[in-house]
Image 1 (cartoon, helix red, strand yellow):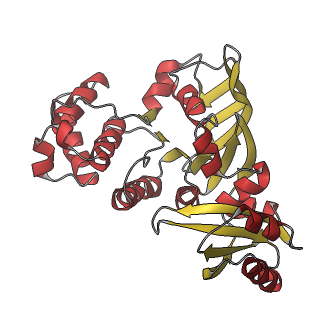
Image 2 (cartoon, rainbow, N blue to C red):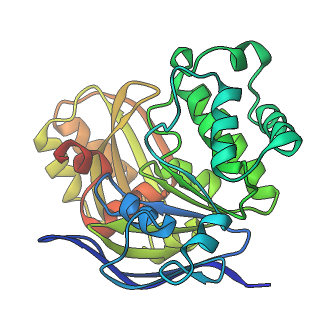
Length: 325
């Protein structure tokens, strides 16, 4: 049995004058849940498309399931299940009809296909009422489940999931997380691309942080946090965050980085401060905020996250990156 289901060696992809993926190398062990992290435009989707054989690399080699994608493209496709970022379903069909259509494309038929469809409808928790409705009536989360079911029809060992929870509400996102975790427990090798660092921390045992086509960090979430040699984050929610306040906080001795962070769930903007000694500098932080005439609504101490690691490595937040795209 092979030890690595995916091997990427010095892969570059150019589109005219643009380098989308720049000399990337990585390995994904069999049964691993591997995260490709970074902002939109970092090169994650381009790398995933090369892994699936949709596009060829400009240079370098890729092996999936032990097969070179250039030499044995059909063997690679047999071992792969791909869930693209964009929904690939027929709106005028229901879920069962869509799965039957895609199953036939994989060469499945008869009772084997029918049984496999029923297994996957149960696995993705789609009830009979929903199954009978046209895809056009489905929520985004339901469509994602059918997309995942379609990718599993031929029982692939390797799954490529490109931003599977993008645009979903918290409830549907958690439902998708459960499906991904179940696939992982069943021994599937999964590559998950995401720009949500909390998703990677929750799901992945290995991650590669991509930025501008390059892998800038590779390891387990905990290993990456240790590499930046900063363990603590102070999260302050003030009533306002004027530019002078940011300048004052960044000048405090012991502050490695300070940035704004918007909490989508709480709908509030917070000031996040990364430091090695949170308790020691907290009084100075409070004093600096008070000196600017700003009221503190809450303060929380926590460990450094992958989002913090990205900022320390690039000097930019993911929010800032996405606003520029």
